[in-house]
Amino acid sequence: MPRSVYILDWFALLLVDNGARLTVRMIYTSLRANGAEGVQTRTLIYGAGISGQALLREFRQNQSLMCDVVGFIDDDPLMAHSILQGKPVLGTGETLAETVRTHAIKRVLVAVPSATGPQMVRILKLALDAGAEYKMVPGLGDLIQGAELGQQIRDVARRRHTR
Image (cartoon, rainbow, N blue to C red):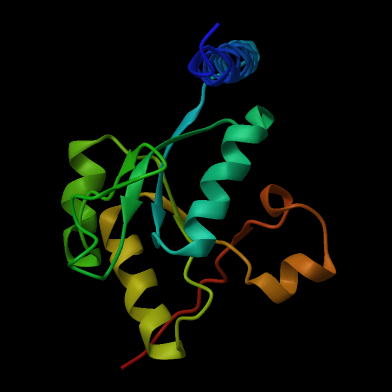
């Protein structure tokens, strides 16, 4: 018997084994997604960096959070129209209001923990002008200190600005 049969057999077994694992995982994920009761809120994640992607992973793993993530918004124009974890980057912050209207977004989650004060004020103004509910996602330090990510999303303290 040729030696190549052993190598081809090993590759075939590897393919079958990994294919079976992938199939089981897809079925399990599909059943968990369909098992969530209630209406999911159409959500947009502002920030396509590490925090935004971690937030998307949390929503996929924890269906009880009831969020249907439509995509990302990111201020980096090079990120626009790319795909991250199967979700599109729908534009920049300047197009947030239009994106919210176009995709019937109900909630914007701001996942930019590295933003400076002026940057955060600008982002929150864009979110307010878009007319959707908006919330802040904590930074990595807050996550290390506390519970899981989904439980730490908080409302933004609204202050009245006088000029």
